[in-house]
Length: 486
Ligand code: ZN
Ligand code: CU
Image (cartoon, rainbow, N blue to C red; front, side, top):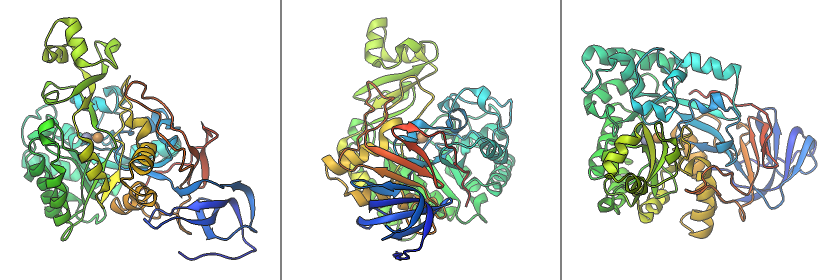
């Protein structure tokens, strides 16, 4: 990085005496950071620069704003544009449309499977195109930047109606390919699948490959997958994802990689070498969240082999949010399966991973950090509010699984590079001024499974596109977020 020593410089915001960690994985250095407009103007010894606003960052780390590569914030950035759950962690960009479910494109009046409740109620699906979603964000911008994937289940719902328990026909595949091309033309950055979920799991590999190939001319578009199986068939599912990426000639990203169910603990020892091997000949990425519990819709097939299941929300029984399924079943004098039935539609937190796998996956060179946070729950998994500070507190400071610059790299430079987000993810002159200032000694997640909606400690300031969006433990009210395209 070129150092600037121009004593005559001026800028809008000057951050002095910072410990800069630039997101590339390089170790920290002491420097000042100048921001002009929406960009970083200079990094170096700038103490004599004139600025409209000067901030003394002594004792703080200044890093690129965190990129949450795995979110379901599609609707949240519209309904709650301050996005406190993420901004309070230092996040400045969210990738939405994951796990095969995107808010757009979905034509009005289409019947949607339960899975779509992960984003919000059916009535909220009112964006028939990426353009209409993008226009909405341009008119009412959020605090953070938003990049969008097109969900395979969204495409299927449009092309196949409610007759989803089968593979798509050639005609339907052609329609989905057209919709995907149109979406990419309007700025979507790739497609996502959720092949573990009914009814999307009915889609054979060939269907996914045929649709993914429609990304053809969009070289940077990525294929992102909540893979077909995260339990007993985890190895086959990782292999399938790599194969789809290979056949569609693009970056394939394994979402929230985990080995679920007691008898699969330790199997990241099998999956990570498979990914490492594939990396020799193609682009593969993966992300992880720093918890041993997962969270999604409540399904009987998913409670098997869990240490504990906690209900996160239930439409008929909202009063059961935050309670254990075993406790509810015993109160009701029924089996857990029966309780699942009665709670439906519902969401849950499943304790089913091992700490060992979480650490091994996190330490893998190509692993990014993504929260997979779900907002449409009364009692959400704490990852929604705690993911990024938790990595810095627990996995950097306490357990030493990562050093600080590597952890930051997995939240910034690696993420921007994997998702091809231009001029983001590095603290470097010319790049967008997406920044977080935090105290490396006190940064900590405070969200817990019992009390999940808690801001983190130690996040001092957050800037997106040159404007502060978080300061003094509060939303500044500024809404500089943009829709990011390739
Ligand atoms: Zn998922
Ligand atoms: Cu997800």
